[in-house]
Image 1 (cartoon, rainbow, N blue to C red):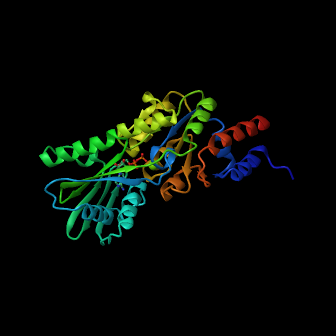
Image 2: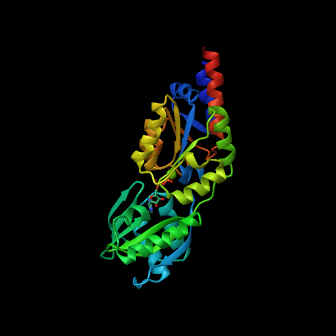
Image 3: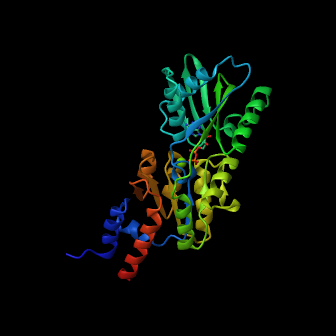
Length: 300
Ligand code: ADP
Ligand code: MG
């Protein structure tokens, strides 16, 4: 039997490793004329590594103790940065203590009680904001230095005082630049980068992928990502959002079409998306858009 063109396109997309949830989604994919990409886990491989461990004076902690403390708090988190911290502690053979009272705030970081201490790990811009004591100023300075070097800096606080800063680096996916170029050809405009990471690391990585200054939107909370998408929609654009994290879920849901990265993606992102990349290959997305456009030509 012959399948309707959009359904064969769904099957075809599946062969390319993109799980499209319905024929309606397949049709909408062919309509997109703007793209918003998340950074960590989407444009990058999503397996970042801890590259720098900076102790802040007065904490009395050694490098291993700092890393073990951060890893204990990050342990329950599914964020790629959390996995980087836990992996670094394991690689050093450190014991990861138990924790209580875990909380996680998308775009900000985590908190937990470890050995009776309140520990917070996360974005310096969020966790140090409004603190003007010398310790926080020093932590912000150390973080800015790491960010200038293209790192994502994560600050560790114990009982409200910064005790150290970790530098974390992730690699661009090998197919990121080619995919950005393909999106640009298909939609007539450069994709927009929407990230919760710091502007310095974001700009550096975006440039490597061929995304220029104006299209880089950094320091965004999940709701800010939605607003960036809505601004494009207000100008009549049909926006494709590509993301992997809990922080991307609202933007994936708000998009004309949302696609989640299957391998590194969080459960919430997978649920909020209309399609899932199961083979971890970003470059299949422009291919699937082209498939949808071809199928729609057969339908109309
Ligand atoms: P992206 O938009 O690039 O995927 P996120 O919104 O997930 O990034 O995170 C934004 C920032 O929030 C990170 O760069 C980091 O500073 C901080 N952050 C979020 N979750 C965590 C976590 N589990 N551990 C440490 N930092 C975190
Ligand atoms: Mg992400």
